[in-house]
Length: 183
Image (cartoon, rainbow, N blue to C red; front, side, top):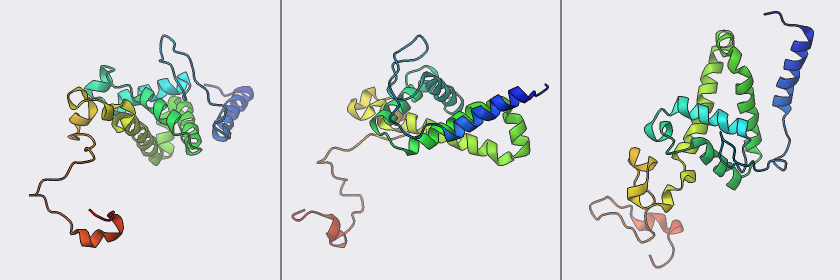
């Protein structure tokens, strides 16, 4: 494949635009549902599809494969509820991964650690969307929860819950600064 000057400048511009990217979250807006994506509040449809493909690669678990748990939609909900400038860094990194995908084999031969970094990034994003409560499992009765039972987590405990007497307890006098008076 011959690389012309025009093609080189175009791709260099795309890479620079990806690295520089937007400087604030103010321009992020929702997107209406389409045939391929649900209604989104933070991610673009392209970002949604990228995360969806990542989740199928990283979490080949039944709830993800049969679409019971939509990892990309959970990430969208999480970002919409918790906007942070740190997400701009994540979005830029995700765009770089999208651009590098066609030449990832070459990049891995030149810099082997790059492949490990990309895989770690994908795992972090997928774990956020799969294991977090963006799926709404805290509000569901235990018999309707999907993800938490698969990892052995029973869900949050009620406010009045106390561990069984057979469990070793920490002496409350050691935690004076952390316990309210009267407990």
